[in-house]
Amino acid sequence: MREVISKDADATKSVTAISPTAARLSLWAAAAFVVLLTALHIFRSDLAPSWRFISEYEIGKLGWLMRLAFLSLAVSYTALFVAIQPQLRGIGGYIGLACLLISAAGLTLAAVFTTDPITTSPDAMMTSGRLHSLGGTLGFAMPFASVIISWSLARNPAWSSVRRRLLWAAVLTAIGFLVSILSLVTMIPSDGHFGPDVAVGWPLRFEILTYCAWLMVAAQQAIHQVCRDVIR
Image 1 (cartoon, rainbow, N blue to C red):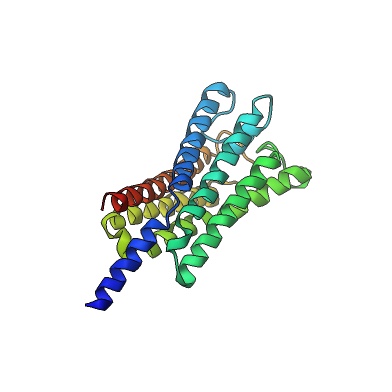
Image 2: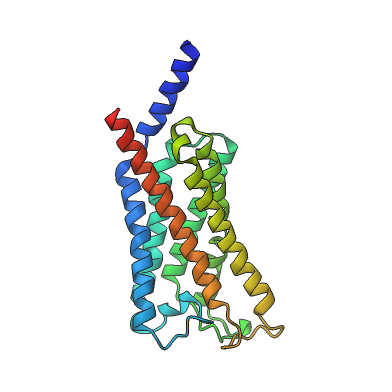
């Protein structure tokens, strides 16, 4: 009996350890990224979304909007780390949190260093473009972060009521990642040159939006958990 009470107390302590401020910041920062990206699709209609990378919105006079968008997403990742870090234990939880921070670092690099146009050959890339590409590579840690963190939280008794939502959101990020990777592998020509006939733009946009969806689900559920604990 005492063991059961102890487990319940640990679960309650885990929930109350959530930072509601950080969770709300993560939620709104992810939403801000979606709003900014949508606005850029309207303001920069000269960039065809079917084959242009979203990073190319950094180029030009409205580039600051895309940089702000990347920074907003980096803030969302970092704030979620702060919100849920006390509830994750074990090697799996720590790996997931590390992947989340790696992804945040990648987005920060992408925001600070402007990309080269997609039509630039690898040999002609500037240092800024190479560092931006490095940031994009670090961003590959995000789907792993979402899957590992969701699985770890799903095993936490305090999160049992939202286990299904978390896991489905994580599955969506994995699908988004696989779709974008497959599109790059199958569509990029052997010479590495992009053009209107290389329609990789939409899969990549779908991928980043699945990340935002998982962030908002995880942050919203963290807030919900705190509210439930307060009511009790």
